[in-house]
Image (cartoon, rainbow over all chains, first blue to last red):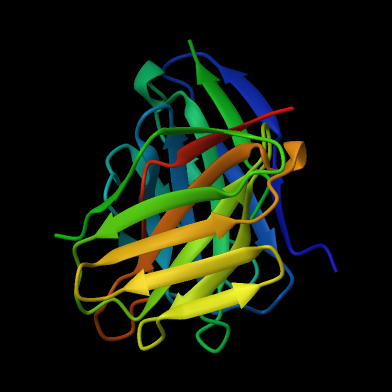
Length: 112
Length: 113
């Protein structure tokens, strides 16, 4: 069982480019999340999805979009990347019965 | 809104006990969590406690919850160099159908050999 996988592991991107970070889980969890982690700021929620077909905005949603076409996948898209989006991005998933969130290994994104 | 506060750094000697503290503001929190993040890795769930419990022990880890003061602590007995990491406290937000967590900024634990 892989758990949660994220791709790519790291990426350097020119400002203005479009980028999609991929996240896949094989635990059949209902809910999925995207966080960004920045030094001194901890983890901040970008977007979430409580179930396939629904999404919601977190604390810092501007400049990001998500979709949840099925249970397993939850891609995060930066339509036009800016340097302030340089960060480490973590995907997570949870099941209501489990009451915990499980995290992927992260994607380190640098926008120049 | 919800807020979770932690001290940023803690340094202990190998073999001593470590105590990492956390305060939170949402009195209706149902679950409180401790996650560990090693360098270059994702967050690993260490333990969690339900809000109607005062204490939970799991091997070297002891979680204490003071719901009146909204204070959570994680004690690591016999701290080892492998325990060096960033530890995040998190609370599960209240609200119907919400599974969201609010995280503290993390406490970096350094273990001195």
